[in-house]
Image 1 (cartoon, protein in one colour):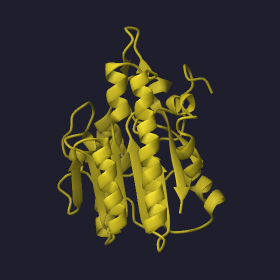
Image 2: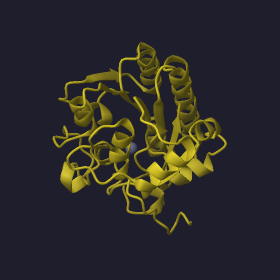
Image 3: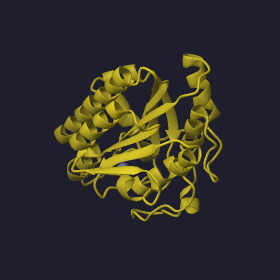
Image 4: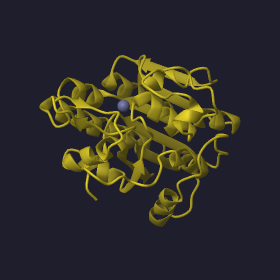
Amino acid sequence: MRYDRDFFDDPMTGLCAALCEKAGVEPPAQAAPASRRLLDEIAEKYGDFTADRILIYNPDAVGDWVMDRFADKLANSLSLAPIRHRFLTVFPPKTPVCFASMYTGAQPETHGILRYEKPVVTIDSIFDAFIRAGKKPCIVSVKNQSMDRIFRGRDMDYFSEKYDDEVAERALELIKADKYDLLCVYNQRYDDAIHVTHPVSRKAKHAIDCYETNFTKLVAAAEREWTGHKTLFGFCPDHGVHRMPIGLGNHGKNIPKDMNISHLFGVL
Ligand SMILES: [Zn+2]
């Protein structure tokens, strides 16, 4: 695998139906088929089970190459969630486009977000699918960011917080409250850092440290609080990043650094 040349081949749109299958929920109407490769990896490691809790941490912009570059900084995340599954994200690799695909299982032309804009996604989503199945989904995000905006209008709870640490604090409370069957938790510090500096700057490294801390806390809380449940949890970024010739970080191109992502999974 060479980061300057090779694209991963398992489409990230296969995550949505895979999560639904593990939760025993009928997937959204227009979702791509579940990633069999991911489901096989989960079954091989954890056997056959149905998860009654799903906890997804969405750390913005951690490309596959970023995960490798900072493997030491992400050591806890990588060991807590030992399944590392390589996905090809959707084009253009922009935050709202990718999260719309992640949680509908549909390509951008189907869900309608084709560039950096944050309209409400009106097609069927994992949140609708969980609600139909009598389950409670919840999104905790930074206020006005993509994950806060694009899945509005469903009969579910949304929490909009000031920034990443407040999001993590809220998520910890919600895990403790044990009310939600699907909890999606969005953090953005690395994406912010790379746009004002570059993907391996000091500021960017600090952001990766924060992701590691927050994910570790969330998983520890789920382990402590959800003892009566079977939990599937994941570390699921939206897209990667690259460094432009002028030096700043960016994303949005059809290149492996932007398109190749790794999702980490574990089971409690
Ligand atoms: Zn993003």
